[in-house]
Length: 264
Image (cartoon, rainbow, N blue to C red):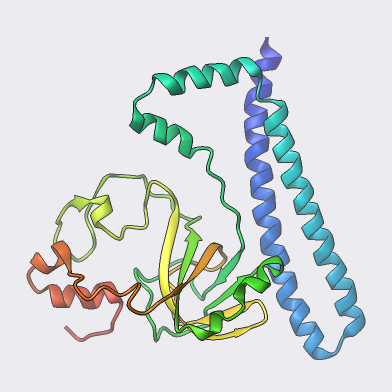
């Protein structure tokens, strides 16, 4: 009995560890791929051949870790526990049921975002921000970038992996003098799901790399998706400022929100 009590926490820990291993390995793979491009430009063909093998083996190892984690979840989901979860699910309200079902959502990292920010990042993308901003898409998704360069702007959807603040349905945005509003009426990065969204300008695309204007995320943020920003479809002429327009000197506040330098 004691052994069973010990096994369950260990299994839970192992599931988390394997997910961490995959993400950690992906960071190394992205670094290796970046160096591979540099080495190829240097003309070091033999070195490039060996490094390419390392990258391929690393990706293969990651796939095995994912498979092991999948089998772990399947093998240790005992039948009684499944039945119990189903009974609990049926007895809950629609709100609680939605929260339960959301636990089964899974997202696939398709790349990584590189920015100069390690400890602090702006609240919103600053188009003329200084530094190098680049979205590196994993090689298996390279064909998905075909004709993306025809657009000026893109939506970047990512996993806000460094959020540590506690979730609250009421927030006080900066520069509002203590005004409290609902979370969904704000741009707070602390959301029920750790998903971020930014609109940035495409400066150029080279192979699997999209060079962009300023991004408001930390370096090595996991990339979830990219979508084109389309004129008229994504720009609403009757959009307003909501509660922001009710604040005294809201035009000054907008400068802060947009990250635009100003002297007052």
